[in-house]
Length: 336
Image (tube, rainbow, N blue to C red; front, side, top):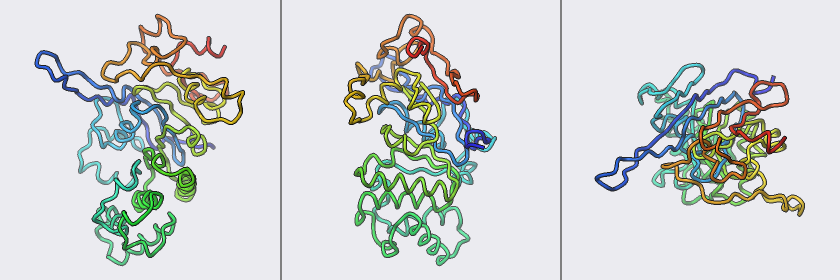
């Protein structure tokens, strides 16, 4: 049985995160920034679901809303079959052990006043106050070894470590409670290419060892291809396409997905000649286009695209239900 055939550990249903924006004038009403506008998906145990898209598409907002670090305007976050939307801080506290996050900037996410050992131990002390000092230190040393940090670093401070080491500290902090889901918010974008590969490999090893489920947020599709089981393409807070990794890369159904994949660097001149270049800038989420939000940059858009937002429908050819979904009226024209 594959991971996507198991019962989901996390289900997101029509999730919306809207922010009121002050226009700065007395006579004009506040506008609404639609950062996430009706996203639905499932995350299964042991699976990596990657979320890709341009900067400003709502990827990080989605990740924080899934963890209930942001207020949901609408929709449901369902954890192990139970909705946790609207729970108080006290009600969510026991679930924090199960759901953790790794941030984009490894150094900025760590408290500079705390030693590496204290940073990693803090969640353990918070959620397991019954543990004695030596038991905590043993757990910290064990986790440091698992993520590739040397024992003598336990009393150092974050600024004494490299970028890659700081990200390992962040991973150790997230892993110390042995969570079931980790949201990885651009965890390697601030690192050198060689270090990126080490961190990606480490996340893969931790997933195998602990059965982790990862929601991996990135704009780098070459990295996403290496780590993912499934990929979800986000544009202006809307899901354009979601599919198994191989299906999405080999047979993208949405013109936005095609453009993203063609932007991945390639050495083959024939591949470079076939690049699909997006025209224009990303529209403002405060005033998104009517109908399909991608239509203002789409070569195939017509009047139908401006009238109604396309539903996310199954277009898989494998015979497995909802393995490849796309929100587009023109896939039959684009791909026949």
